Image 1 (cartoon, rainbow, N blue to C red):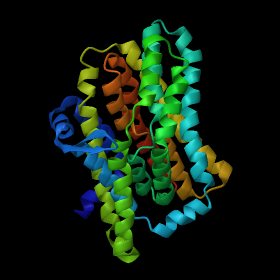
Image 2: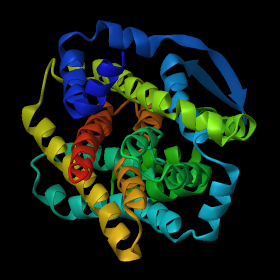
Image 3: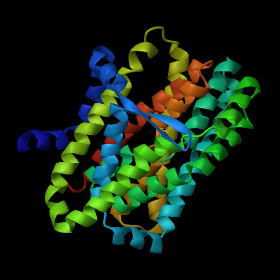
Image 4: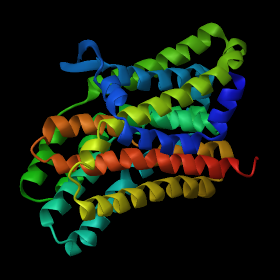
Length: 344
């Protein structure tokens, strides 16, 4: 078993790519996994479905919270420069990128309607909190898990304010029905979903750390890392299985190509911004990992849910969100391998 997990760590980037290939060739088990429903709960007047995918995401944050002591969170709040800079960059970089796309590619592309779909997709990417899966990548890279969790918690807690800001901002550069949909979406909420999938499991993990003590937690930490990687691979496969076959069934190759280029460029810029902020703030390599994975990875699962509910009449809007969701894990795997290379 130990040898198998060693191979898992050593070849994880290759396994991420393999999970996408498997999803394209054998999507059945992945779509089944994504469709497993475990009931519903009502919070803040919102009905949230409890799916197996949501519980797996929650497990990532429970494991991350288990590695955090309460005093670590206090320490982070005493020196919040990296936390606040990361939060600001997480909102501003995607917004600036969307405005740049609108003023460059948007003016040159042959189909104005496709441009509008891409911009709306970027609006949803820009307005989402930081992804829970970024903690697993940070933990794998021995990064600052406290800063990683802080970025997720703060971006999620402030999402009722920041999400409408992002949606309304890009609503100003879209037109017609697309602009109206963005402004309407800004008025709807996803607080219940975020509370269940992010805040509750994280707080439960921190509470368990206090109950068990640092010594016991340190004994199970290697196991938690292994579990996180298996959960990441499972979620990657499941998410890809639900979209890749339909995307390539009747493909519009030029649209897929430009979306791939746009989302890959945005993801690389986001990761590079995390590295740049780390240099400017003169943080440790552990903080650098947390900033890079935090800024590069957004909670696009929530974005897909919102887009499906509010933008069902514009199915092409889903393509940029889906593309970014796939690209961010590929880029994260590559970044992880590069960050660990000097150590090896």
